[in-house]
Length: 439
Image (cartoon, rainbow, N blue to C red):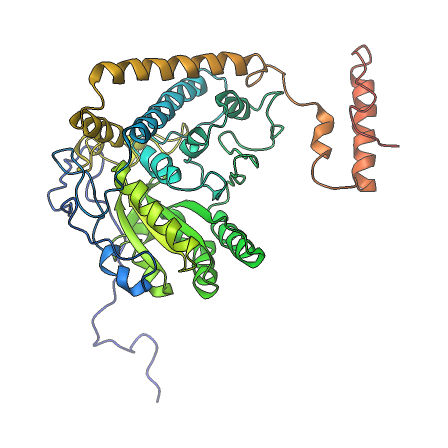
């Protein structure tokens, strides 16, 4: 007789399920004593056209250039000019000033939503500066530094955040989800990880055309659990796509710590090895290391040596967004105790050590950035803020989707125009084409 289901395996040890849990929660002490901080400059820099397997050790180590003495060390030092370093520091300071004012604007009710990148500025600013200006960017929602580094007007960014009448995206995107064809910056999507297969596909198309432009995409460590990310890795490996997959590991995906995406088992850079892709794990708060790693990967892609997956190991110093309160799920001490420091402060100290900077110039630059952001904000506010009625005409909801407007949408446009006339008979008429040609 077959055993009853309840009796099967009765003499075997019971199975248990592991649920990831961060080391500290609100009210608990933070201890990073066992955090493995690699020695700056100790990591080898393989040839950019090496076999992917040659990067294995670099998937578990941490590529660092800036040491505790604030000096640059080792073969990964990109040896940037003083002018480039000053430009990098200014872009990072501008991002921080921009974030501060937009956060304040959201609290004042001028926009519905905002996301800061405090503590992660180097992963976008320094990394993107290592790319060509026309290399295609497929960003996530915390890469405002790339647009700022590429010279996108601050006023245009704020128009989009306010979804006002000057918003080039016509109020259709959630605030901070920018897009700029002129700056090779693909539209940000709120659907996580969709940008990764898009970046790989674009890179494949560039290679098919025999073009020289590569693609780079940014994704959070939590989003690497999405199927799209793994599809992107498969296609990138199979077709040797000229693409860089940047994983920003800031330790937290909203309120879930990185362990839920697999960080307890291995590094995110190590995922590259299973696909036969080159991988690098980088100190994401070291601007020089971020630049050097991105430059290495870009040169590799241009040499048709294949894609690279870079894990930028950093820390989200503030909330996930203006809708989030991090004090509800992590210790308030984490930001101060984070062992890799602040990227802006580290670059500033490095430049002071070189004799190319000082505290007075830093203070003046910070004040100048704050002033420029304030002026841009005032300029954008002339076009409207949340709830003030200055937005794109209603008819624009029917535009920019179809080359020729389908008959049913033409009917809806006409119906909307008639209902407006009935509801507000005394309102001034729209222009003749306010709802498009609905004849």
